[in-house]
Amino acid sequence: MNQITPDSYVTADGRTIGGTVMEMKNITLRFGGVVAIKDISFDIRQGEIRAIIGPNGAGKSSMLNVISGFYNPQEGDVFYKGQKRPPMRPYQVARLGIARTFQNIALFEGMSVLDNVMTGRLHHMKAGLFSQALWKGRAEREEVENREAVEKIIDFLEIQSIRKTPVGRLPYGLKKRVELARALAAEPSILLLDEPMAGMNVEEKEDMSRFILDVNDEFGTTIALIEHDMGVVMDLSDRVVVMDYGKKIGDGTPDEVRNNQDVIDAYLGVAHD
Image (cartoon, rainbow, N blue to C red; front, side, top):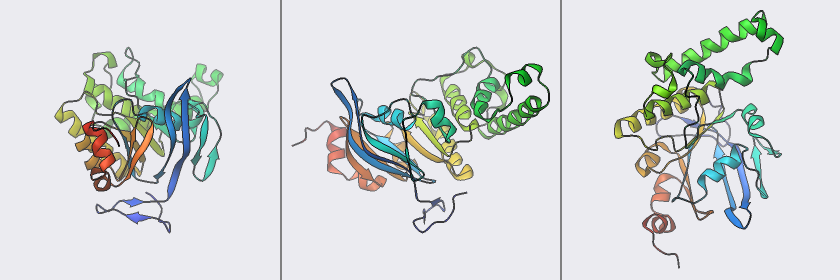
């Protein structure tokens, strides 16, 4: 559960949103002569669902890659829990408590659902190589503890019936759920979701929306997500930041963003003056 702080507030549905846990300050990211992100600033508050939206090519995934350490910006700073974060590799960011899913599913197709989700526990495993090879003592205890944690996540996401099924045999919607399970296995404080409902049918989207809300509510996990389905975004999000051609053109509650003329123009394809 999120702690009550002076700048906390309680949402209409009873969730507590805390203070700023991550802040992006004046982020600029270039690839050669192409500017993917231009001088963007926004924050993410503890316990909220924060959406990042925009037309194709707006720079949304690039921003998520900055947050998760895949890209280091040429300008600007990332602050995490009040501290300026130095340039980091993705595995170092993961150790801070930041996990993610990917726009294009990145699972081990030949491995079972259980084994795929177990890979999310890697940074919780401290036993040395020799101990793991013998599977004695600490390594055995860790294996049992981590499997228990993974089984709870499998139950939570209602994928018990496919736990031993190779991922390559699963339909697309279930693969997305397995990828969410793997990210949750890391026990993140911030969960980054890159288009978690892309390619899903209506029923699958409803299921995924329910699980995202449950993760946020029951685990208190802060969530930042990219999503193109505006109905989903407006229903799930506490706040929304809008990007277009690498720039921020809107930031606020769903209602504020919905009525922002720059946002309306960007989504309707109207040229800016």
